[in-house]
Image 1 (cartoon, one colour):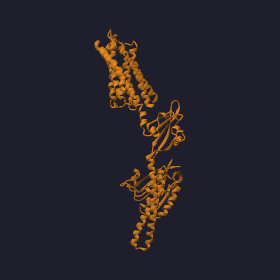
Image 2 (cartoon, one colour; image 1 turned 135 degrees about the vertical axis):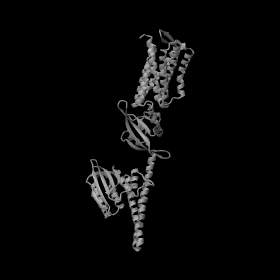
Image 3 (spheres, rainbow, N blue to C red; image 1 turned 90 degrees about the horizontal axis):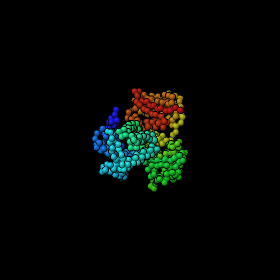
Image 4 (cartoon, helix red, strand yellow; image 1 turned 90 degrees about the vertical axis):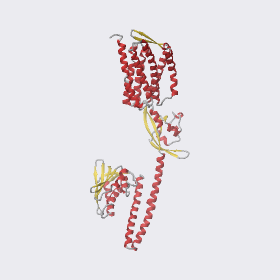
Length: 550
């Protein structure tokens, strides 16, 4: 193989090596509007164009055309350098750079490119010898190269800084970009600062490295999808107030919501957290690590605000541990809870106390006049008396609802058979015509106080919604960690319209339960950290209550 053939082979390789850039540009096209992607696409296009043009110069026989292509390659090279710099600037800041930022960086390239167009000899001289060529860089060309190197150094510095402040996938992205960038710069400038012949220009290897590394990072690490600086912007966009403290409890960072909430500025950075939040004594135990959760109250000029404050540790540096303080505004939730508490008190007072007293008065008068009236009217009064009895029963259950929903009970170990025995004994007295069978195993479970009310309501539903001859059986299925208490009857079976609201966890005008007994069963079981289910069977209704064994 002759010396003249080597440049031609290298030219073909460079032209072919520039073509995969088309694939990468196509891969990036759908995300071209993401921060920094457009600059990266421009740099890939101009870099591959630069390689393509240099490869073409090794195949074209005309010295004049070759010289023109070489001058064009210098323009493509500076555009590549600028676009890579602007790409790195956007990538590491996470913000789209403005025209005002771009213009100053164009002044030097505009001068050197202008000199190249007006007087090419002032930029560089192209010399031909034995089928090859060499370049002599002149004054404007030297400025051009020096400025390109400066931009490359600035870009690599920005990437290095980004590497130091990121972690995880973000750091892996930066590592790959830094690696291919540094190696690409070396390969591109080898012919400028070494005696390597131009026909062996290794810039093609820098381009191929860029293409391979970027494609890999796109697939593996979500390049351009998760920008390293997005973390910083997301930090400010988080609705909660976030304050970061170092190992000695000093404030080292905070987001915009925290700055607005506590009126923080750069002056507070480095100060002790206890000093910065001196007006919030509730935060002191959080900052000092004595507790990890607390509700913090802030008094404003017109109202009070409530925040759920939590802390979590994080590590940094060489084994140091800091603290992340997060405050979430729960003022609407706190106000709603207070309003619901007032509503619950009013409901309990009116429904449970006032209504019960009035109903007792009505029932008393009904029973007083029953002996004095005829049989027909007496039957009417009996119907009214039963309605009053049901309303009184609802009033009693309203008290139970208030207690169980209000959180007045704690879980503790209880004998399931003892609870069942007591409830069955009471229910047999109330419903003498019903057959109630108790086959519950003697096993300890964890449940709330007065859990027997759940069993009582299950038996009551079975008896009152079925004929007097109904048979209700209580049994248990004992497992390793749980016990299933079963209350089953041989009645007509519960309607699906009664079950559906329980499954959905809500009632509507069209879908509601006729009473509150089913809700009480469900709530007592769930407050006991158990699971409740009721279903219609071929022989009646089956209630299942899963409880944890003690």
